[in-house]
Length: 479
Ligand code: C2O
Ligand code: CU
Ligand code: CU
Image 1 (spheres, rainbow, N blue to C red):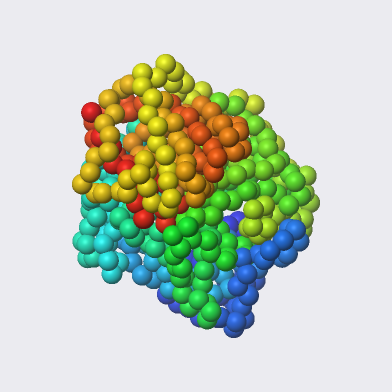
Image 2: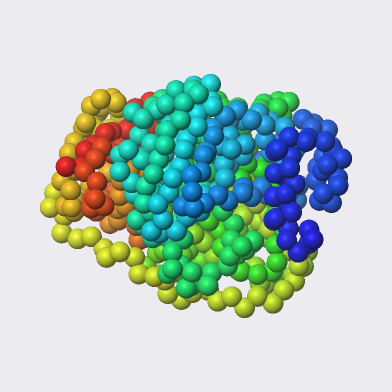
């Protein structure tokens, strides 16, 4: 069946490898062509500079298994493990439930989820559900870090609409390392409005955790080379796969994209210039669909995209690339010709009403490599208090050393304006966001309100993880 359901058979192969039986025979028996030549001697490029989209990719894209923590307790165990990166089929990494990325969590609005974080790492950690509107106890704040060998239990209702969030470690000063070594996963919320749209689903909906990283010379370990200005790795990992391809039909596809990199900003495009129809971002569906040919996405931001491959024939390919680095990211390889009549929606479910009439303005300056308004993060210090239920205007500026992807826990916000620098609010920044990119010279204004039932301690921080770890993070209390 590989030709019919390419992604699930790829999944089977990789899951099998990850569960332990690392033999060439097992790979051959799966019937998938893979680069099994000399582990460690394989090619390691993440696409190479100046990729024009012609370079053939050699490794099937990994798709993590899906788990539903709304149907009963799910345990996420973080531990050292071995992963199959494609060219290197047994590289050590830090993984959730054996995978890099970890399992895709999938729940519905209205569910109550139960999750246990089991820390089998050699050091302390805690898991944060980025984008989930939860109380402090369920937020994975660094003051909830649990030591090696311990666990932390979460239970929270899903109160927000359909979107793709994600999860990752959040211990103070070690987030960058733990994410770079492999700890992250997608967390999808479904709802009835989404279902009514009839969007591409099953193997035609692909969660894509896109990041960069490094592998040691022998191909035996995912490694982290921190730099206070922000870590940038030499290779692109898409769902943990180097030089990935995915076998597809000539059909409409839905791509759920996360920039899961520590510090690298991607400018996504297709090598052939094909359009990508933006339908959603961090906070769910956009006010209206919009087709663009390039999207700049910073650390922690998400995209919900429709990409139409119906103009292609069997054996044609389309390459997703990063125009910032010149890397090829993911090759869509058409292996089957079909007649797909799925419609691209012309309207989307209305987002929650826009905020207006802020009662107060606060200004936050992101300075150097590790300060907000001149202060480095201190676990015990609360930097400001925000009255519950009041709309506020927050003005985000920087004294340099950008990019600073600014992320806020506990609610969503709207991007109202950007002055200086790129000077505009981009189509993928409409609707509701939890992370917004601040570049040098820019001032970004947002409207924000905490009205989800929790008067609690939350965080604002730079999502360039090395800046966050150096202290570009602030505690605030909703009162
Ligand atoms: Cu994705 Cu506080 O972070
Ligand atoms: Cu977050
Ligand atoms: Cu920063």
